[in-house]
Amino acid sequence: MSVDALERVFAEIDEDELVELALALGNLDSPTGLEGAASDHVYEWCAAEGFEPRRLALFPERANVVARMPGAGGGQSLMFNSHLDTTIAREETLTTPRAAAPEHHTAWREGRRLIGNGIVNNKGVMATWMTACRALKRSGVRLRGDVVMTMVVGEIGVEPVDEFQPPQYIAKEAGARYVVNRGVTADWAVVAEGTSFALCWVEAGKAFFKIGVHGDEPPLYTPYLPRPTGIADSPNAIVRATAVIQAIEEWAYEYEREHTYECEGGTVVPKVSVNAVRSGVPYKITKTPSICQLYVDARITPKQDPRSVQRELEAAIAPTGIPVTVEPIAYRRGYEATGVEPLVRDVEAAHEQVIGGTPERPIKAITSMWRDSNVFIEAGIPTVVYGPGASVGGGNFAMEIDDLTTAARAYAAIAMQVCGVA
Image (cartoon, rainbow, N blue to C red):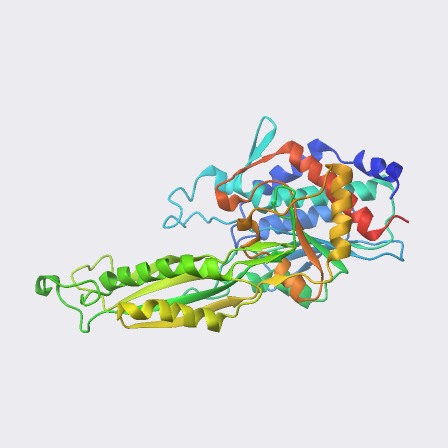
């Protein structure tokens, strides 16, 4: 790749245009299931820039957008991917008391930073490689291989359970997986997410479980409660659930230490957490509930399966003596990419040209989550995750404008490195 060609492309990366696109997307509120306005915006942007986009939608009101920059021929193809949906809906006050706060639904500039959940995860990052593709097109530098642009819905984990069912409650089947199943593939893929410019090619899977903790039947009217009782023999399922939660917490630490997965592409530390509880009737709290349902998020490594995790979970609860039922409610595999070495070398070369040095591996939390890279790897596309900024999962809602501009340059260089310059 010639320095002249690279400089011609870099000259077409306009910071003001990049910031404008990132803020426009960040100000289109798009919690999972409501990505329609953001989807329409990227479609119209791609059309205006001559990328001839198309919509691929399991649900018409929340379409994935796919566009292609055709190469001259003789090169390999590269897919860029980011997601349109954001993590917090306004009504999710039981997990996030400030769910309606501006940083979760809007975006703004403060000096040399852009603020907003949607900027960090993931539309600001999306704007960087979209800008890189526009710069390649404007520069007149022709690549040999195609560049495939995928702006997808449903990356954030909304899984159907109980009365929360599709079409409102469904995510990943509608996003990257739907796009791949419609024939959108490439030789290589870069999932653009916040890694602080670290590089990885492994991500965790997940197994979700619903645990029914059983109390006495029929329920007792509060004045009839026997006292004293222990936790395990309380007639109240909520009280019994506290012992079950304690057992899960004690097991969870042993679980992550036993199953930590290390590879060249990063380290997966599979965490377990009880993240939802349902029991009783808030407007009629005169009776002890006979059932308390716990919802458990268990992350798994590429070597694990949900059945073995369920057996471990049941074994951890058994010593409490409390009657429970354990029901799997979701399973998504995690993957370590294979055959990815040529792409890694190309990304490292681009990183060295734009930033200098060699990209490190990200913090373990980054490789211990689920990302759309799992979909592409499962489809046989060697995939890496690489991008600017820290993850929103750690409470970060700001992105440096300098990092966004650097990312646009890095993605342009990666495309030239992978696809080749005609």
